[in-house]
Image (cartoon, rainbow, N blue to C red; front, side, top):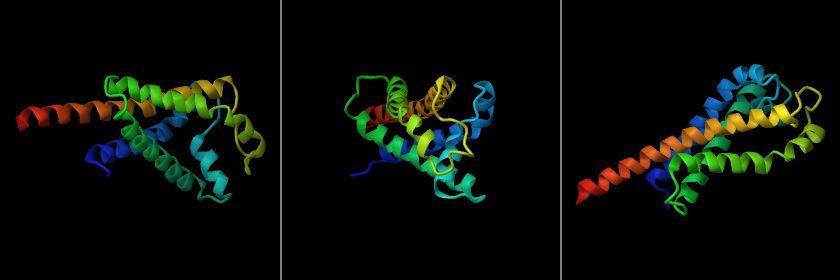
Length: 156
């Protein structure tokens, strides 16, 4: 059964992914890397100008899935701070999936148009981006848990 918490954290995941995508122009300059997650996703499905909107939608959907998964896993680690748990899961995803970037650089249908996804700068960039996602979802979880504690106290 999907709960209000599941929905809240799903939305938080989508918001975190949107924030990640919107700040990419800044981190691309800061890390001196043109790697762009929205472009990677969008150009995987279209070569036309719609890649930006399609890639953004796919990225936000991935963030929503992350938020939902976080909500479900959070129930299994209630003693861990929600902010720490958000960062932990985001970085587990980051470092778990990062090796696939080497494969993406070789097989992506638009590889000639994309900046490399694999490299030291790209890993640092991905770590920063996942920290944003983890912070948004972790903060949302902290607020949800605080609200739930207050509701339990008021119910007594």
